[in-house]
Image (cartoon, rainbow, N blue to C red; front, side, top):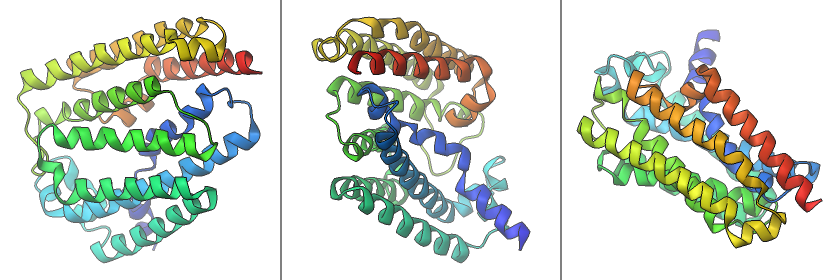
Amino acid sequence: MIRGITALVRSLRPRHWLKNGFVMAPALFSGHALDPGALGRSALAAAAFCLAASAGYLVNDVLDRDADRADPIKRHRPIAAGDLSGGGALLSAAALLAAAVLLAALLSRAVLLTMLAYLALTLLYSLALKSVPILEAMVLAAGFVVRLAAGALAIPVVISYWLVICGFLLALLLAFGKRVPELRHPALRTPAYPESFLRAVVTLLGGMTLMAYVLYTVSPDTVSHIGSRELLLTVPFVLFGVLRYLLLLHREGAQDPSATLLTDRPLLFTVIGWALLAAAIVSRAVS
């Protein structure tokens, strides 16, 4: 019994819930970082996406179990290793999906629609698009944009188009970065990119992400909303974070982005410092 619960929890991949921090970004950049009501609604939306993401991982692992058994790393996943049955995983996924949809519906119809869009993207990715080069990364990045939209609709606030661009580019960087460790152990159901292409793409996307963020901080809409260009003070954090992530990818191959964030202290402290400074600047400006 305990072994089965442990296997299920591992399959939910709770460390990947960090990715749903994207849902909280609209609250931070709209000046609601200190608003308990807005933060509560954002947190509920993030929780709904955590449940939905874990359901997606379960379905994906059931579909990939044969391929995972042939992978030297992924063969240790509970479903591939036989620690969790496919039927049990699908039943758990159904329960998680029901809870995610219910939470989204409680927030608003708009949040529910974004949740359904996210679930459709996730299912399409697992069933057909996971093996399509480039498109698979774009679909993963689109899922993060949907998270941003859900976070904005949960409050609700109007989200800056520059923030959407930054979010998409960062998510695309992380999606391609996720493929770098697979250069050593190619996965059977994901594209095998040439190493030179993959490293060039992550470097290009790193630069584009930084430039998009700089343009966001000085855009007329942002300056008008905040009343100054003080968000420029957060650019060094983003610069260091992007360069640190690229260094880890090129030097060590890194790991999954969530694991990298949790295990690399300089990167973790940079993200925390950036979030605190950005929240302080925006909250002071709109209060």
